[in-house]
Length: 323
Length: 309
Image 1 (tube, each protein chain N blue to C red):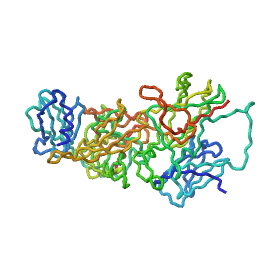
Image 2: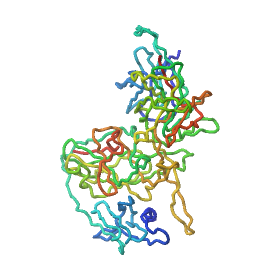
Image 3: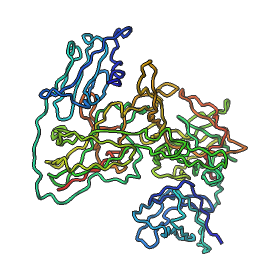
Image 4: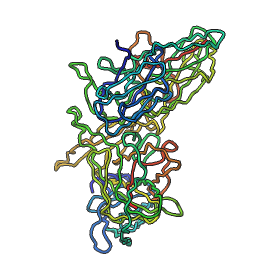
């Protein structure tokens, strides 16, 4: 019986850096303090608050095995030969039941709005989520069942910028193995805003709450825990916005090419040659996926006005609230 | 010379229409009268900077007598020459005087090698030397400061991370080999008063050429560079010539991105954050200032120095 589900990005890179994210199979939340070790070597690390791990090893043998273990979960072993970069490992709880203690008189009700699944943000051989990036801000409409809910967490699907520029083969619909033309930068800092809904225009309106997010790793599944903020959504309807910061920390460079004049011939005709042309983009790139019921979405233009988003995909942005 | 002429056309801001007189100069050694290659030419207020080719020749179109800007001519191993443009009227060459060489022997008790400013090369994600929409890169050199555990040592080797894409797919063949670069290394003692780069510790020209490597190892043992005190700088000097010329697309305030000339290489920024900024930039006015573009997130360039003590 297979006890674990593992989903990988398909790009392979020959290096001895092992990194990825460990999630709980039931709630798809990052698992903190999972021990990730290399069998036979005294090398281990543990996952951080986002479930992220990274092991850098100099002399890895292909027969080595990565082990993921945590109290209450079934240990999983992954052969190095099967490892692919930016793995997402999903651990399932073990059969041993831990004693449960109720500490509240009333059971809290959680509601996940505009939820998305792991399969919608992870690239595999059959499916490629579309990376989404805009210049300034993106806002998505949310509607809860009741007023006065507490915003518990926001989840964001994130994609490596390299995937923005890979192409597909026509014949087999498989990823073209082009060399990346962007330099990977996992680091990003951006803002999450909660905005009210304008009763007349239905556009994003007043700023209600802002949270600064800083990520240093290549996380695909970003969980923003807002439990301690105790932010109450007075209205059922609201917007969650992502604001891109155009700062050096978020820079990504992409290689393009452009012609320049190499020389002129005797007739005065210009002889051209291609030279490198770099272009800067700003992190993060969000995952987006096809959806039949796309939530109303808007982008902010240079003048600071909200305009309907032309993206026909659903951006992987969800909110969990509790009553 | 062709590219220099094109670049300096920007100088002719007055009466630029019609046929222009082209003033051509050659930079030569004051003693040997031979051309000095790869001379740095800077027009200060116009914010123009280029490097000559091997012939040391550059041109300025227009009427020099009307130009009020300052020209700075500088080459490694020579004293910098600063002159007002209108004073070049009637001249065809500029003579640079060699600076005095320092001759030092290497102490025989240097045995232990130490690596300074180490970083994991896979973790380099940011690069200096590119125009972006938030800042124009107007620097001639960027220098990384190193600190030795005790005074004295010989600089043996450096490692430099740079932005380069290695492409090999058939569908990318147009882009293969587009990123050659050459640059110069300058080694400085720390200025005890200003804190930035001071006196040069190597007057020989160290020119590095590369095709498309992301991580360069440069052996300096033959240059016999002695570090007298416990701090020194290794600087990347951009050669603003035809080989290194490429572009960046900068968004700026317009809707469409603007194509701007940019010179390779872009130098990596260390992923290891220190407590102080250890990067200094030489601006077009030839002033060394702390380079704060990546502050407070990054403090060092991705340059490792190997020193024998």
